[in-house]
Amino acid sequence: MNTIFIVLPILTLLMFDLGLTLRPHDFQLILQRPLPVLAGLIGQIVLLPLIAWGVGYIFHLEALFFLGIMLIACSPGGSSSNVFSMLARGDVALSVTLTACSSIITLFTVPLIMAWVTASIGTGTDVHLPVGNLLMQNIVLMAVPILIGLFIGMKWKQAAQRIHNVLKRIAFPALILLASVFFIQHKDTIIEKFPSLGLCITVLILLAMGGGALLSYVFRLKGAERRTIVIEVGMQNAAQAITVACSPLVFDNEVIAIPAIIYALMMNVLLLIYVAIVKAKPNTP
Image (cartoon, rainbow, N blue to C red; front, side, top):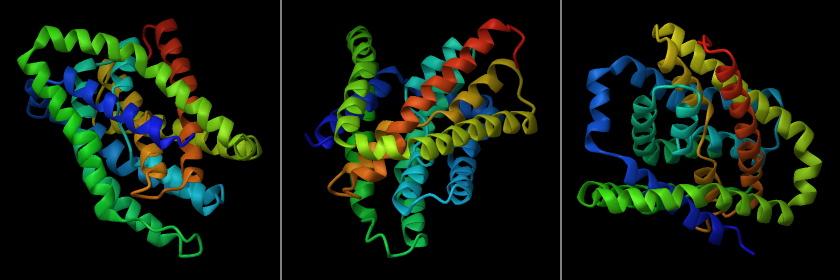
């Protein structure tokens, strides 16, 4: 089974569901509280790729895995981060705003950064990135579903809420199905590379969360805002990364998606631990 036929509808549904929950006033937070929004976007768009590049270099990752790590770092956001922010007593409004902004910004930053990364690792991998195809794919699979969901949410609020209630229940099982199919197809490579690649990805997540905490300190954010920045910078859109890696229009290489599959597992484990610590210690910053 070609995983692209699973991940494409999953990503489309996730972006559509995100659009259902968005409202124009979500973007007003940019003007009302610019500092936390700026801190989050710097962490997601600038700091994360820098951290991923450093981690990939230190761990001497193979070229295809290096591309996979960078692809994860360039794909921030996702509606799941809003749920984790709520569980961690974070600022859900800030989380939604950052998710919306990063989803729009990365339509253009992902092609630019990945084109540079692909060129930088050399031609020995025989991997090429058609930037135009990636940009068009992002628009079709991400921007259009978000806009459709936004339109439905504004025009038919009750229907949008009912659809959202259904989609949020099937999103996680769908991702588990994708991970299971992917693992079955690439189990030998995943098992062989998991000790080193799993450690690399764990370090990436922890440094990203630490980077979020550092940015919060620099921007003098506290409490709920800080917890949200930690989650938003630490949590990436694995479905988007897998789609770009597997798409026949872009990389068309499932090996590049292996880090994203491992990342999806480690991300949820580490963030659930963080949420548990926050709940156990109400005064956690």
